[in-house]
Amino acid sequence: MRIEIPTPPAHPPVLLAELKTHLRIDHEDEDPALASLVAAATDAIEQATCLMLVGRVVDLYLTAWPTSADNSWWDGVRTGSVSDSNTALSLPLPVRPTRQLLGIDRMEANGSPTALDASGVYLQPGTSPALCRLRDTSWPTPGRPVDGIRLRLMAGFGDDWNSVPAALRQSVLKLAAHLHVHRGDAESAAPVESAGIASLLAPYRRFSL
Image (cartoon, rainbow, N blue to C red; front, side):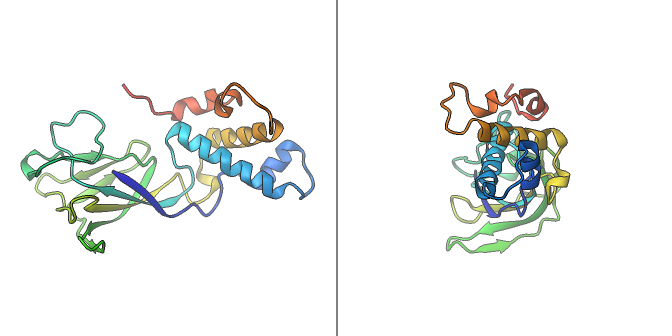
Protein backbone atom coordinates (compact mmCIF):
# COMPACT_ATOMS: atom_id res chain seq x y z
CA MET A 1 0.00 0.00 0.00
CA ARG A 2 1.46 3.30 -1.10
CA ILE A 3 0.22 6.88 -0.70
CA GLU A 4 0.80 9.87 -2.96
CA ILE A 5 -0.65 13.38 -2.59
CA PRO A 6 -1.19 14.91 -6.06
CA THR A 7 -3.07 17.90 -4.65
CA PRO A 8 -1.68 19.29 -1.37
CA PRO A 9 -3.77 21.40 1.02
CA ALA A 10 -4.55 24.90 -0.24
CA HIS A 11 -4.60 26.43 3.26
CA PRO A 12 -2.89 25.79 6.61
CA PRO A 13 -5.00 24.78 9.63
CA VAL A 14 -3.83 27.89 11.52
CA LEU A 15 -3.62 31.36 10.00
CA LEU A 16 -0.37 33.29 10.20
CA ALA A 17 -2.26 36.18 11.79
CA GLU A 18 -3.43 33.88 14.60
CA LEU A 19 0.10 32.84 15.45
CA LYS A 20 1.31 36.45 15.38
CA THR A 21 -1.50 37.50 17.70
CA HIS A 22 -0.72 34.60 20.03
CA LEU A 23 2.95 35.62 20.14
CA ARG A 24 2.12 39.35 20.26
CA ILE A 25 4.13 40.07 17.14
CA ASP A 26 2.96 43.15 15.23
CA HIS A 27 5.56 43.39 12.46
CA GLU A 28 6.12 41.44 9.24
CA ASP A 29 9.84 40.77 9.53
CA GLU A 30 9.34 37.22 10.82
CA ASP A 31 6.41 36.24 8.60
CA PRO A 32 8.31 33.69 6.45
CA ALA A 33 9.85 32.04 9.51
CA LEU A 34 6.50 31.95 11.32
CA ALA A 35 4.79 30.42 8.28
CA SER A 36 7.46 27.72 8.26
CA LEU A 37 6.78 27.03 11.95
CA VAL A 38 3.06 26.60 11.22
CA ALA A 39 3.95 24.11 8.47
CA ALA A 40 6.36 22.23 10.74
CA ALA A 41 3.82 22.14 13.59
CA THR A 42 1.13 20.91 11.20
CA ASP A 43 3.36 18.08 9.97
CA ALA A 44 4.19 17.08 13.55
CA ILE A 45 0.54 17.03 14.65
CA GLU A 46 -0.49 15.04 11.58
CA GLN A 47 2.24 12.48 12.24
CA ALA A 48 1.38 12.24 15.94
CA THR A 49 -2.32 11.62 15.24
CA CYS A 50 -2.15 9.90 11.82
CA LEU A 51 -4.61 12.53 10.59
CA MET A 52 -4.71 14.82 7.56
CA LEU A 53 -6.14 18.08 8.89
CA VAL A 54 -6.99 20.21 5.85
CA GLY A 55 -8.51 18.81 2.65
CA ARG A 56 -6.30 17.28 -0.02
CA VAL A 57 -6.53 14.69 -2.79
CA VAL A 58 -4.79 11.41 -1.90
CA ASP A 59 -3.93 8.53 -4.22
CA LEU A 60 -3.82 5.17 -2.44
CA TYR A 61 -2.20 2.37 -4.46
CA LEU A 62 -3.08 -1.26 -3.77
CA THR A 63 -1.41 -4.43 -4.99
CA ALA A 64 -4.20 -6.85 -3.96
CA TRP A 65 -7.42 -6.89 -1.98
CA PRO A 66 -7.64 -8.16 1.63
CA THR A 67 -9.00 -11.63 2.34
CA SER A 68 -11.86 -12.39 4.68
CA ALA A 69 -9.45 -14.22 7.01
CA ASP A 70 -7.53 -11.04 7.70
CA ASN A 71 -8.02 -9.79 11.24
CA SER A 72 -5.12 -7.35 11.48
CA TRP A 73 -4.04 -4.17 9.76
CA TRP A 74 -3.63 -5.03 6.09
CA ASP A 75 -0.44 -3.86 4.36
CA GLY A 76 -1.84 -4.01 0.81
CA VAL A 77 0.45 -6.81 -0.38
CA ARG A 78 -0.54 -10.42 -0.92
CA THR A 79 1.22 -13.19 -2.84
CA GLY A 80 -0.59 -15.41 -5.30
CA SER A 81 -4.09 -15.01 -6.67
CA VAL A 82 -7.08 -13.88 -4.64
CA SER A 83 -10.49 -15.24 -5.61
CA ASP A 84 -13.73 -13.35 -5.03
CA SER A 85 -15.00 -16.06 -2.68
CA ASN A 86 -12.44 -15.29 0.01
CA THR A 87 -11.99 -11.52 -0.38
CA ALA A 88 -13.25 -9.35 2.42
CA LEU A 89 -16.27 -7.07 2.12
CA SER A 90 -14.39 -4.06 3.47
CA LEU A 91 -10.93 -2.53 3.27
CA PRO A 92 -9.82 -0.29 6.17
CA LEU A 93 -8.14 2.83 4.83
CA PRO A 94 -5.05 4.42 6.41
CA VAL A 95 -6.10 7.88 5.21
CA ARG A 96 -7.81 9.68 8.11
CA PRO A 97 -10.26 11.25 7.82
CA THR A 98 -11.56 10.31 4.38
CA ARG A 99 -14.53 12.31 3.08
CA GLN A 100 -15.10 11.09 -0.46
CA LEU A 101 -14.14 8.39 -2.95
CA LEU A 102 -13.28 10.31 -6.12
CA GLY A 103 -12.60 7.29 -8.30
CA ILE A 104 -11.03 3.86 -8.79
CA ASP A 105 -8.46 3.27 -11.52
CA ARG A 106 -6.80 0.10 -12.76
CA MET A 107 -3.13 0.84 -13.39
CA GLU A 108 -2.05 -0.82 -16.62
CA ALA A 109 1.38 -2.32 -17.30
CA ASN A 110 2.50 0.86 -19.08
CA GLY A 111 1.54 2.98 -16.06
CA SER A 112 -1.57 4.51 -17.56
CA PRO A 113 -4.81 4.53 -15.48
CA THR A 114 -8.12 3.11 -16.68
CA ALA A 115 -11.19 4.44 -14.85
CA LEU A 116 -13.33 1.66 -13.39
CA ASP A 117 -17.02 1.49 -12.52
CA ALA A 118 -17.29 2.18 -8.78
CA SER A 119 -21.03 1.49 -8.49
CA GLY A 120 -20.42 -1.75 -6.57
CA VAL A 121 -18.39 -0.13 -3.82
CA TYR A 122 -19.06 2.62 -1.32
CA LEU A 123 -17.08 4.60 1.20
CA GLN A 124 -17.54 4.50 4.95
CA PRO A 125 -16.21 8.01 5.67
CA GLY A 126 -14.78 9.57 8.81
CA THR A 127 -11.76 9.03 11.03
CA SER A 128 -12.07 5.23 10.78
CA PRO A 129 -12.72 5.00 7.05
CA ALA A 130 -13.21 1.87 4.99
CA LEU A 131 -13.97 1.01 1.39
CA CYS A 132 -16.81 -1.52 1.24
CA ARG A 133 -18.30 -3.62 -1.54
CA LEU A 134 -21.78 -4.99 -1.96
CA ARG A 135 -22.16 -8.73 -1.43
CA ASP A 136 -23.20 -9.45 -5.03
CA THR A 137 -20.24 -7.59 -6.53
CA SER A 138 -16.51 -8.19 -6.89
CA TRP A 139 -13.52 -6.02 -6.22
CA PRO A 140 -12.02 -4.58 -9.44
CA THR A 141 -9.23 -6.69 -10.92
CA PRO A 142 -5.77 -5.11 -10.46
CA GLY A 143 -3.74 -4.30 -13.55
CA ARG A 144 0.04 -4.37 -13.16
CA PRO A 145 1.49 -6.78 -10.56
CA VAL A 146 2.42 -4.01 -8.08
CA ASP A 147 0.24 -0.95 -7.39
CA GLY A 148 -2.38 -2.38 -9.74
CA ILE A 149 -5.30 -0.40 -8.26
CA ARG A 150 -5.42 3.32 -7.49
CA LEU A 151 -8.04 4.75 -5.14
CA ARG A 152 -8.39 8.51 -5.44
CA LEU A 153 -9.71 9.92 -2.17
CA MET A 154 -10.60 13.31 -0.72
CA ALA A 155 -9.05 13.45 2.73
CA GLY A 156 -9.09 15.99 5.55
CA PHE A 157 -11.76 17.50 7.78
CA GLY A 158 -12.60 20.23 5.26
CA ASP A 159 -11.21 22.56 2.64
CA ASP A 160 -9.82 25.17 5.06
CA TRP A 161 -9.07 25.85 8.71
CA ASN A 162 -12.75 26.40 9.60
CA SER A 163 -13.44 22.65 9.38
CA VAL A 164 -10.54 21.49 11.55
CA PRO A 165 -11.60 20.59 15.12
CA ALA A 166 -10.75 23.31 17.63
CA ALA A 167 -8.52 21.03 19.72
CA LEU A 168 -6.36 20.18 16.73
CA ARG A 169 -6.10 23.81 15.64
CA GLN A 170 -5.07 24.79 19.15
CA SER A 171 -2.48 22.02 19.10
CA VAL A 172 -0.93 23.39 15.91
CA LEU A 173 -1.02 26.94 17.27
CA LYS A 174 0.56 26.02 20.62
CA LEU A 175 3.21 23.82 19.02
CA ALA A 176 4.16 26.53 16.50
CA ALA A 177 4.42 29.04 19.35
CA HIS A 178 6.49 26.57 21.37
CA LEU A 179 8.89 26.09 18.45
CA HIS A 180 9.23 29.87 18.11
CA VAL A 181 9.90 30.49 21.80
CA HIS A 182 12.38 27.61 22.07
CA ARG A 183 14.07 28.04 18.70
CA GLY A 184 17.70 27.07 18.95
CA ASP A 185 17.25 25.31 22.29
CA ALA A 186 18.47 21.75 22.73
CA GLU A 187 15.59 20.00 24.48
CA SER A 188 15.62 16.45 25.72
CA ALA A 189 11.91 15.88 24.98
CA ALA A 190 10.33 15.94 21.53
CA PRO A 191 8.43 19.19 20.77
CA VAL A 192 5.01 17.52 20.63
CA GLU A 193 5.51 16.03 24.10
CA SER A 194 7.02 19.20 25.60
CA ALA A 195 4.50 21.69 24.19
CA GLY A 196 1.76 20.79 26.69
CA ILE A 197 -0.73 19.56 24.09
CA ALA A 198 -1.03 15.87 25.01
CA SER A 199 -4.55 16.28 26.41
CA LEU A 200 -5.68 18.09 23.26
CA LEU A 201 -4.37 15.32 21.02
CA ALA A 202 -5.46 12.35 23.15
CA PRO A 203 -8.97 11.94 21.62
CA TYR A 204 -7.52 11.88 18.11
CA ARG A 205 -4.58 9.51 18.50
CA ARG A 206 -4.86 6.03 17.03
CA PHE A 207 -3.72 3.21 19.28
CA SER A 208 -3.06 -0.40 18.33
CA LEU A 209 -4.94 -3.02 20.35
